Image (cartoon, rainbow, N blue to C red; front, side, top):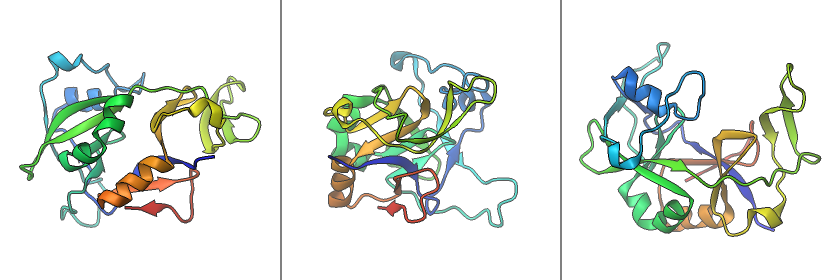
Length: 196
């Protein structure tokens, strides 16, 4: 049985956004209300992303650039991360090129395409829609049917396609490569997440 974690980006590293509303809508590709579908890879024009600071930010000083960051919800990964984890990324999704303002290194937005129906609804702790109680809106403490995960190292589940899950194998490789900026949690409000 392998451990499975929710993929988050560490708040210790810079978050990014676009100065273009059109690009920001594409960065929200997974959101049916606010986002726009991503264009096919061959039509993608790599945008330049800029540091994001919330309106209530105490400081507008940029944080370090890590190997794992985010642009809203999408995950941004460095060329170094792609070099070390490329097979896992290519097997489970697409890497859309992006530029980060202030960095000469290539970066990519990882878009997961592996969707596994592997959530154990009876054992998982979830929040359900008030309108449709059969619809899961948030998975607070996921438990997975291991036989359905198979060899996937990065995946989504149908219930919440805005979150990515990774396996112990992925975590071990990140640690071995000493990549920075990744935060992994076993549940939504994990008191002791793992940081790379």
